[in-house]
Amino acid sequence: MPIITVNMMEGRTDEQKEALIMAVTESVMASIGAPEENIRVLISEYPKKHWGIGRLPAHKAGR
Image (cartoon, rainbow, N blue to C red; front, top):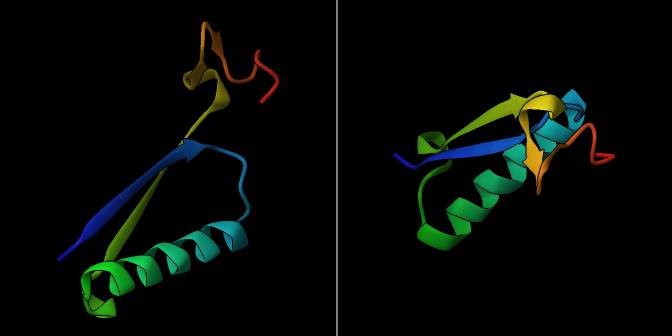
C-alpha cells in the first residue's frame, strides 16, 4: 500500500487539496501500477511561521 506524504504551507483551499490528492493518486497509479483503493495521500500543513525559506520564516519572506 503506497502512502504518500505531502508537506506544504497552509493556505490552499479544500478544492486545491482535493485536486492534489487526485493528481498524486493518478501519478502513483500510472508510475507503479498500484490500484487506486490501495493508495493513501496524507497532507500535512504548516503555518507559514513554521516554514523556513533561507534564513527567514516564510511569512517574513513574503510567502
